[in-house]
Image (cartoon, rainbow, N blue to C red; front, side, top):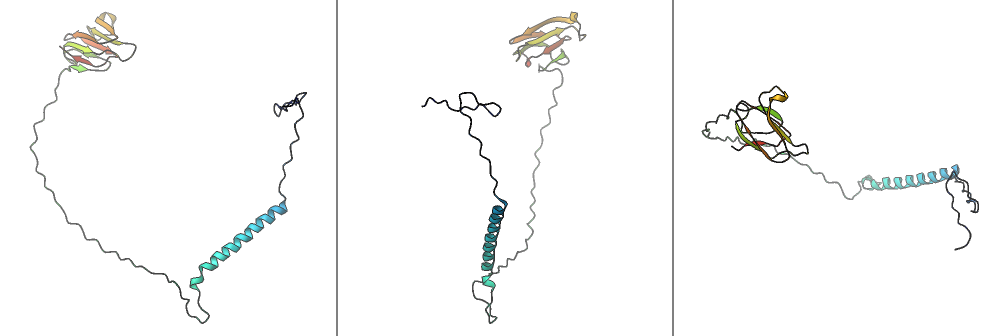
Length: 191
């Protein structure tokens, strides 16, 4: 290494720093002359023309005739004829199925459910059966809220009992009460 500082040009908008050599001048870019470009393109075009003419004339050698009018000998093209046969109609096939006697349909069970899920308010004895129900609780951080209600008025004094479960829980519901549930997993009747 020499003691001469190396050139460090900080960028196009900065001036050279004192103590550093000035940058070398940029060399001008040169365009090729117009005459040279025309000459090059013309030479390429002539070569392409000669090659194309040579390829075209060699392809017609088999079709030439002799001076006396007789056809030139050489490989002749072969003609292939393909015939298509008419298709015959397929025979008709008939399948016979024997009907099996159907079992009588069971009527859908109507009446109050003994399991339910989702947010809502249910009338015990009409929407859901009376009894003891169990839930696994809630899947989120807010907990599973339930309330037993005297009526569906939405008033605070209609609450018989309520809780906010963070885990599994049970509640006993009596006929005629309303049961309100929010953010709870499925409730299943266990007793």
